[in-house]
Amino acid sequence: MAQLKTWQDRHLLGLKGMGKEEIESILDRAEYWANYPQKQTSHLSGRFVANMFFENSTRTRFSFEMAQKRLGMQVLNFTAAVSSVEKGESIYDTVRTLESMGIDAGVIRLKPSGVLEHIARQVSIPLINAGDGNNEHPTQALLDLYTMRQHFGSLQGLSVSIIGDIQHSRVARSNLWALKAVGAKVRFCAPDNMRALELADEVDYVSMDEALQADVVMMLRVQLERHEHGKLASAEEYRSQYGLTVEREKLLKDHAIIMHPAPVNRNVEIDDELVEHPRAKIFTQMQNGVPIRMAVTERALS
Ligand code: CP
Image (cartoon, rainbow, N blue to C red):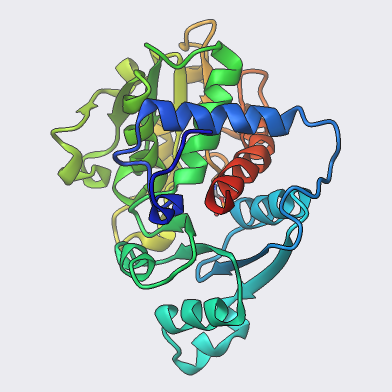
């Protein structure tokens, strides 16, 4: 893996600013772990990690735990709902509490954006971002790039359309930074009221017809839990204008693949019949989450 200069470089807070060499070295290491003959190793035995999820998760949480256990680590799982957070304890105090008990690294998912960077400056252990607000979801984007590279062989020049609720999507942001760094061409497609205005200089928005003409069509979940009232007029209207329907799938290039970070709103952003379509990589993405999270956990503790 690429050499890190200071211990703070072992944090993985986001992909903005990370270079092609470092991204590709993480993907290479994930490939090593994906092909590793044994399911469990003693590579990081005797090291302790806490998974601190202040927001719900299935894929990220369990694939981190799977990755850590495959590396032989001792794993502590923290769930906000049954913790002293319910008594009003802050995120910072929670992280400092686990740090004081001797964990070697922390994986954190948070509802707000911007808090994680602040905490990372105040602790002495590496932190890995498991998704913070609408800011970044670096391990999701890394597993997405891994899946694209696995399928196409290279990321250079690949055209990727990211379609849907961009405004609320940390996945779109992390993918944008990482895909640009490795030489892929990214375009966004979203309803006017789901665009990210602060990214207007970074990426072009295109129509749905244009977005479908890409090597990778990545659909995003409509994040109803983050919407103010009235943003989504109706699921059926959204599907008819921005959903990947069975009819639209027929317009894709022959070699194109379909991706989605999941969880999926079936028959809203993607039709039920397409979730396990031969072109769809949704469950492959989930499978690839484990070796990617092995690689980033190892990077944090190397
Ligand atoms: N893709 C993703 O982050 O899924 P979870 O919210 O289930 O972790």
